[in-house]
Length: 560
Image (cartoon, rainbow, N blue to C red; front, side, top):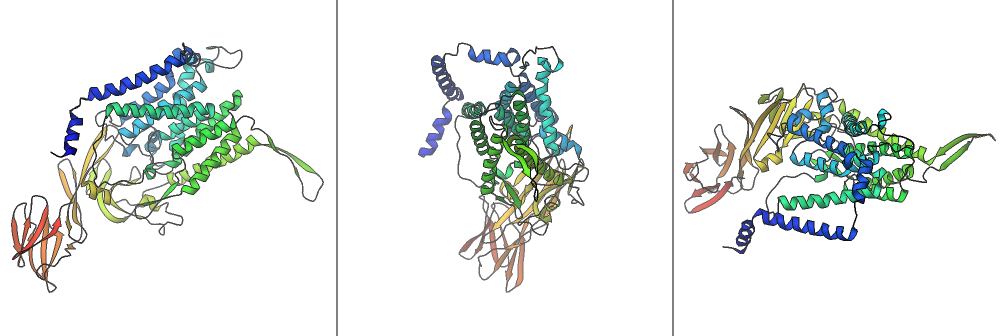
């Protein structure tokens, strides 16, 4: 037994509760020592009760519960936690209002919803603390007016989250899904209210997340393997994140100015910059033809520095200074009073940025599907097919700029279209399907959950491109969706060329000599031999295919 196998076996023999116990004891011991020296003596609980009913951020809990309920019930996440119903809840177009209105509250998977709920639990208590369940103005009393009612103020928190979510759904750039726009809005509100506290809570949440992962997954065994991954930043709806963040900053800034509780400019600048860096708001990118993406790192970094300065100058304490008191008229001794102040200028620039982001979203929201594609599988108004080199109707509608390809972008893979929902979506790309070989596609509508399976079977000829077939299946229906062209094996055997190609039932072999076919045969079954064109072919249990003549044995192809 190798040392590596022995080490892994030893790790796996340790019970889970022992690993979890080590982590929990360490955490509790660390907290206990800290509290022993800090001695809060109820100060923390008193601070919470002063702002929250019973010291609990009820609005945060209601918001988290609502988003979780949408995932578990509406998206069928309770029955299918890792494969929820997603496609009907994406903001495909303004002409599909269900997607626009539901996309901010739906999620693509368990990790997606978990990360957004953790983000909500991180920042929303800080934002809710700034808002407060009790009125803060001098002479006001709880229940004296409707807006001073603690229960109304509690309900205002999830109501604000819904409003911000709907606005971000309407002005999302392209098809999006997820609560992250609202989470970034909450973070923007919290940062403006309590810059340093928000960053400390954010960093603390990362520590808690690490501890939870250590308890749930004490160790990981990995190995080198081929996987299909897109750049991490290419899976982020950066416009939605930035748009939500700006909305939150605007709301938080309005409340701070109205209450005259403005943060220090330096603290606000640093907190905004740190948050933007850690949360990737600098990762501005565009997709380009060929499944590639361009990351504009220099532009993104410049944007977040300017954004931090804009927020600090417009909302920070001592920031409301006169920039321009009057304007001298040309060819005259007269002047016009202007009285332009720092906060006003920042508000104008800030508003212009928000409007610009909104207009880009409106442009993509007007998408209308022209023709779609004829699918091999039809399910609940969806057409599913596999195609290569077809026009991506959605991306091609907006393919402009220096990296555009004449306004046309091609796509390859499993394509889902729906005329009633304005959907054109390459849900699994060609390369991803080649790596994974089999994928499950979830389709349906509220109350209906359907699965379509895509399977790719292939041979890899030595020295040439793969030959493959793609099947799509739904319930008892299985259809051939695509077959590749033939491929010639690079090595010559006894002066003959061997061509591997998809056949009606499986795959076939053709032997070519002097430019003419001299024999054909299906690929043999595992452990058997067939002959054609003066060559014998053998298929091994390991998935290799050999050509044999006399004493010569050459590997000509293998399974992926």
